[in-house]
Length: 168
Image (tube, rainbow, N blue to C red; front, side, top):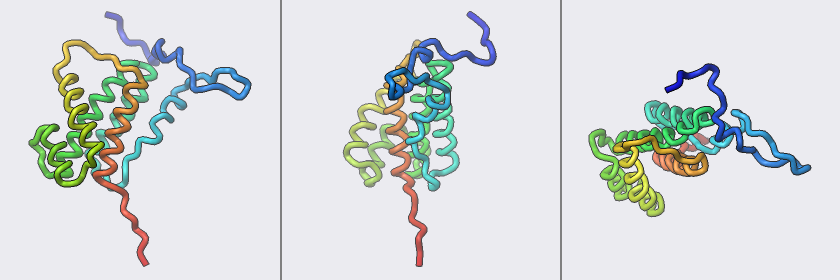
């Protein structure tokens, strides 16, 4: 086993990525800042409880650190499921319920539409359980991890939507 060096070098798998092409057709280098900007659409509303927002913040950070340690993108998915479970438990005031029960209860109470329910009930539970009982480190591509994480952020945002404070 090798010891960690600092600063942490860019993961060689990410070093091969580009951020697009210039108008002349030349590749644009991927940088940590460009990589992190991929998460800009992952919204945390101002109504989201601090505890849940903190879990989502760690999720975002882990994904961004995937630039340096590729496997962190996969760990970010695991963290996203932790945040989802915490969000549903908080919103439903059911801190001891399992993720599957929380998803069903949230759907029955109208907090999750049919599309979100189907995605979370089948996908999130199976994936989260796979992570929880893993025997080896799974490695997801960044492109696999990002949409799953984005779905969790979007779901949490629907649990605590922004309120319109315009009053006359």
